[in-house]
Length: 560
Image (cartoon, rainbow, N blue to C red):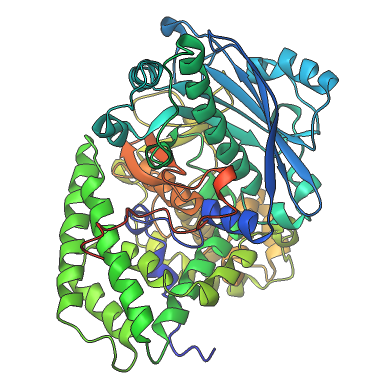
């Protein structure tokens, strides 16, 4: 197409408060996966389901594609309540999982049963692609089992309020604990996109969890038990508790993050550039806006930051729907006119929700961009030592100009320290002037490091970067980042990641939005609960249902 609107300026997009307002979209990894599973006619079976009345045993869920099969191997546990914890230091869980490359034999299952329930304390092989664990939402779990066993459906309000029967506390991949490295699957079409292995693991986990709760009800009362009503069943997603372990990812993978956000911004620019909207496209957009309004109304949180953001989002969706009621979308460049209005009328929450909504009528225009979201990060790793020092200074002043204006001697500007927990090898953030952690600081503040590099470059008499780094090797990491950011415009966050006011949950939400998560519910500024695959079709429904239209609640029939 002839694109007339350019993607947004990285200086606008790559701010933490805006990134902390991102929403799921057609380019989110869960939706990309389900479209592929349906388009390629994947089929599914459950070759093993050996679980007793206490909920203890093992199961296998296999997904068969055009070229390969993958199997979720699940181990269910009867966990005492006092041992149930979402913290990374937990050692037992209600269920543990691995995604197996192929279909496991009995010998594979016995080996996995000795290791997977132990998680970090066990070891898996390169036949395993991920490792994960989950805990029950105990009150809702018990309620659903009791109701189904009695021949009744669970309370719909209670289901809607919680939204999941289990929540994962970690989904590990890419070589952790002996599992296969990313390189093993990166060239497979179904795994090439970001996090497709992990998204498949969670998708099959949801099927297992719903089968398990119905199975336990049936074993408790075989004469009276019923299964969940299909519509109510789809209302259960998989919960997830995500903390600081995920936050630095956006900093440590600059090329990958560039590709995610560049695809999103290209999608927005393509839609804004459209000269006309058909009546059908305009109507589709209006309906999605109304559905997003209902979605915002149903979103609940008790965290003060999120309460304020939800207030903004609901007001924005009201303004958007009112604007659409009084605006003709049949004129020239309707989506660009809408966007220009939104920049002045909506908060960051509403603007970023609009980015996602504008994609919905245009799958043919934007869905292919999902194939541009992977990255070969090693290709950009070498430093160009021949670069003139003057050229690197110009890059720093262009991309990190905001950081050069910060007074880094102020305590508030460098209040935080990112470090790695010795016990769990997980990222953590602490207070520089209150804890003795500065000697363990990780290089996760590119802004400050760029300012330090710039200051030393101004004093260096030599001509090339190679000569400079021989004298100042401590700047190698930020020199590399600056060269990467010069080639990949969305590679760098344009904000201070160690400021006293920095909210790690902004980093978490940005990443989780690309997963496709909904209903972010922060429990502090450092960890958040989300829902995944809520209302999505189950594997046995993919062949006959819509694999992609499930993220927003549908409108009442009268309104449609």
